[in-house]
Image (cartoon, rainbow, N blue to C red; front, side, top):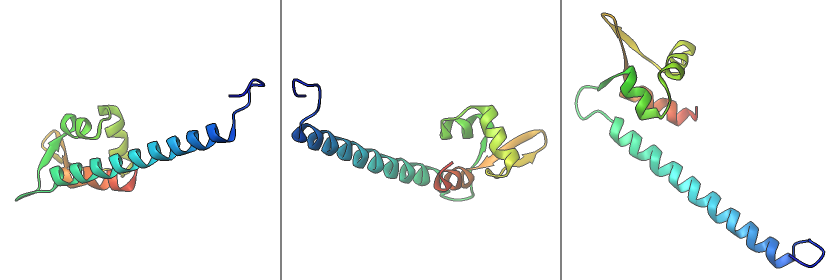
Length: 99
């Protein structure tokens, strides 16, 4: 910064370049996380069914939020007896949808 408290043109370019580098790194990280989740969620045989706790942990959200996503129809689930189960592919679909 100059004596008057304003940024020089060089400072602004450096700041913008740093922001661009951070933005690019975050975008690359998001892509890598999506690919990792998709690979983990991809069934090797029959599709894996996750409990609500397991699905919420995989998504990094709480049980209440997951139930809200299920109720709204954004996450597929099924009931077996009294258990609510979430197909692993439903997790990948939610991530791909960007919710």
